[in-house]
Image 1 (tube, rainbow, N blue to C red):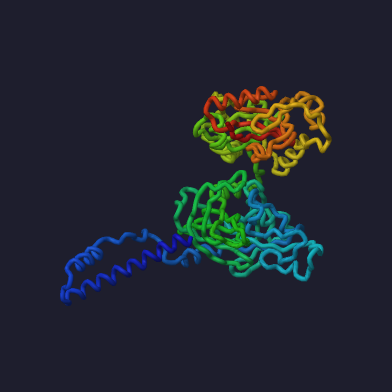
Image 2 (cartoon, rainbow, N blue to C red):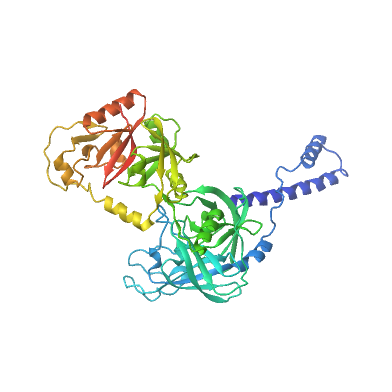
Length: 529
């Protein structure tokens, strides 16, 4: 926001300078002309159009917008049964908290969210109080009392109080919550509430002005302004492409609205990126179309169902594409297929690269997940995939996506094997070494030791040269190589041949599939020599 506003201020100052120069030029007419070239230069500068002209409609003040929309924005005070520091956080942003509550260090003290005094008087290491206070923001979307906020604001709440602009405090109940998008709908009794509307038809451009209203640090009715910094930000959430804004939002802004200059809701403020816990001009909002759709489903009493194909996926990166000789190809590579799930029934395999779903191109694993999630259970999804360099078309009938907790539990169950063999000495047989990996056959004894199925095939990594790229990538003893160059590998000779073929093809790296902890993942390994 700083650079944008500085630009406007500099433009205004430049205009003042031009006006002053023009007056100086008029005065020069009454003075002796010491240097006509100087005068001509001055006249040229003052007669040309300004380099920068403020765009039409740029607001001189946001007061009218705030006056119009602020009555619809509420503060939400929550009493919960759990420590707010345990609330869900953005994956990958563990050190940069959701804007509702900072994570406290183990045994640490400190205030509750928004300066609540629930922790005061407790010494380091003392148990927390059984109830915790936290706060966030929300806004009315109807005159009969429906309020949109974030799921993480009201999750685990046992009491919710909504404070209106006129300082009325009302009890609220949760109508519905959706963990997948971090949205929730509340309801208060009454009618005639001021409300705002979502903007779904068109969206502002990057660089357009926005205004936020919320309850940062318990300071209800706080307005801030900025611009849209970017669209399509992926911060680890599965089903949302976030809007990035530079309007300052802080802890307690969660669930509050972001408005365009017409007072329409274009997003729901959800997270900040901040090393300090305060605003650094990087905030994230759920787009209006997502929030509107989820809110309507929750209000109608419908359960939020999403499509599911039963496969874990990764981004197919530029480095992976180079390793496969695929140029600029992007997509999502299938790491694991759930046994008996929709993907297995539809013929999808580990190592397949999905490039489109129902004709919509996908460039990342997040895009694939979102396209699949749009399907209803029973819908047929048409996937375009690359397998061993050849294009295939698959049809997969969508299932019902489990909850995030169920998926996490399933991941934990699948992660039971391949935990290493302890410090028992092994026979020091001469082993082939390829790319810094000492390889050994995956025999029955190794399968039993690593809790693998009797028929599991691959090449066992016996040791890793710590100076190799494989070590830098995190490979370790007892990992199992299962693929190379898109083909299964079951012996050290097959893996060595795949590396040789990649070298002959002029590639800088080779894409390998590695099995660990019951799951497979893909990564490129640099080819040396």
